[in-house]
Length: 65
Image (cartoon, rainbow, N blue to C red; front, side):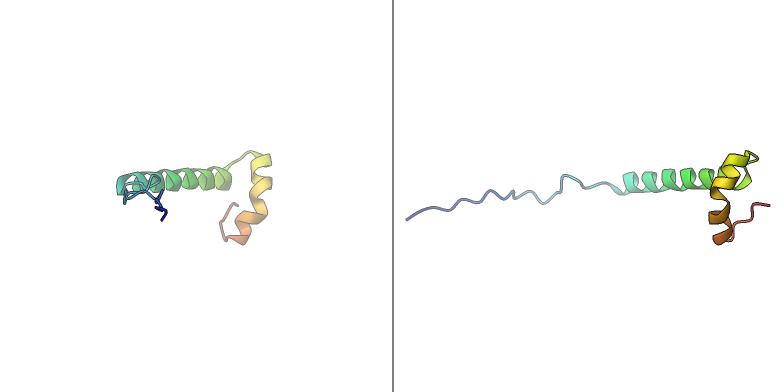
């Protein structure tokens, strides 16, 4: 008779679990970064930046001029 051993962990916590405050912090950071990028690209007077995102801004109904 052979004994089968299980290698499964009985720990209920996941190694990749994050807390609510960590997720909220990441969401706030991503929102601020995204808003900054949209503001910079939308109102930039640098012609290369304006032209690079021009069609995308108009398709998203973002006024640039």
